[in-house]
Length: 256
Image 1 (cartoon, rainbow, N blue to C red):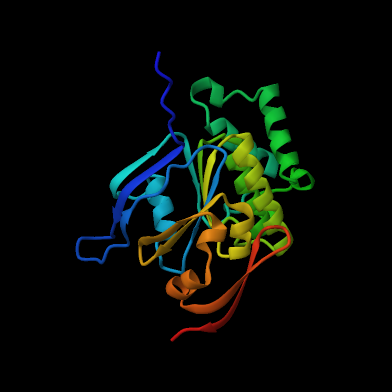
Image 2: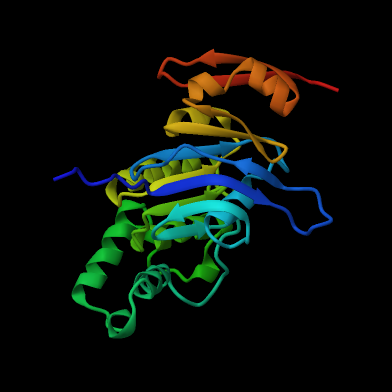
């Protein structure tokens, strides 16, 4: 008997996208390494490189050329969920129940209550559980949005700048929880992040986009180099290794 064929959680081949026939292409020939559940891939590149568009193409929200293969994919945009009269607990519960069809999606069981309570506590949202979404800051609603994603147990989780509304402490906490969730669900995570030091610390691989094309792919320490920063970001910079095995980037000059 032959061994079962391993299927990656995310497969992306030859993605092309433009907003109209007369428009210049936004993405051209994007092919990525297969991504397995439990891994984190970061998309980096300057503004306008096509990172958010690529996430939307993978999520099936944009009609594109090429081939994308995913199973249970969930996309979280940069903007936090809107303010509402629902409490944090209720908001996460609604997200859980929406993952089920028919009567299973209507019945709130003791198991459902336990699941929601567990996710809220694991993500550090316990003190906010009884507050309404209208009482939260944008950053706090962003954390609730991630809880809503985790409770649905996707096999592919696409996060567009998940730390954009958070202070430094909560950025690090959320990135650590994203890494843990990737293993626990398990899910293949693709996220866009601007802080290259955080990218190196929390990512298994990095994809650099430049002008809608893949510039380079690989281990963060191999990809985030002075040459890449000069070619893609247009800056002179020094890349340092840190004591914890990460990297730090010090940009000194923007190139004209």
